[in-house]
Image (tube, one colour):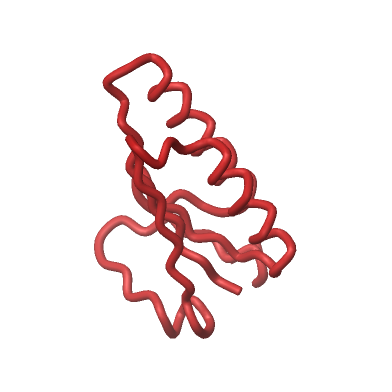
Length: 96
């Protein structure tokens, strides 16, 4: 499944900046950063469940925002990208 993870973490405090780093690190392990606070993740249901729990444990619901968008279908059919797009398809050939 393809999931878009978007987050906005309040960084006005040191705790907020730590939460931001933790959220980014958790997402980096499961997907590719496509914008500063947006990751495209190709995960199975178990990996998504683990990521969701990890992220919900990190964010402060009073201060931060976390959203999951479920992309139905292959990336090339559900994503239209313009401008700089450094996405790497790990499921296809890695040599071009």
